[in-house]
Length: 329
Image (tube, rainbow, N blue to C red):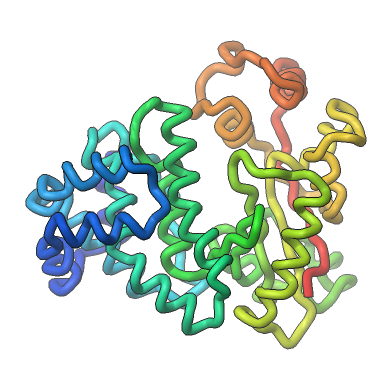
């Protein structure tokens, strides 16, 4: 397996001198203040503060952190900039597990400025910043240690292209251009039939589902209502714009397994599902069972959703990562 840090350095390139100096010059008191703006628990902040000097004085970790800072600053506002999806850095010890917290702390001021400049309301900005703590909670549940689960998600958040509105994240992107745009998408014949809003390059909003959120119909009605108040002003569009979602939750086999009263099924039915889909076992194992790869026979079901997924995987079939769309604006 290729070293994750090597992959990161290849993608990020060398940090700017200003970013490197900026990382190494942040004193512990300043880092403590920055971390205080991230909605983290006291024990997490304490560990981060205690380890900060070791990180900033390490040539290896300070240069990698500075390269992440340089990348975020370079690509902020460019929604077509590629997003690299790396493995988390737990295998490299405490410095690896804490790295994305430090990145967020060093960029929180610039992110808040970017939000204000684009008219992002305070409640939406706070929810977006609070996503870091949720990724930390997920890591703690999985590994019983302090860290950031799926740390690569921090980069598009800090670049300003993801906003969390109430219970969902919304990602500004161009269809078939952005790294996280849904794939596969409609074929050329279907695109021509549907027209504006469905074409490659059309502006769209990707919908992402945070862990452990309320998917009840009332909560999601309030979420979409608030999103339709906020996002057209923050991210204006002069043409038809879709909200798209690609998720393990949109596999329509869940309807028979969970029934019409399931919040997942009700969420799924908000979208028009398209026929092309991606076969994917690893993603559903990760999100439903908290496992990265591994043997399907080792999975154990304790919930209705887990049983529904395992019933499919146990037959040798793949799970379907389906895409759906709805009119947004």
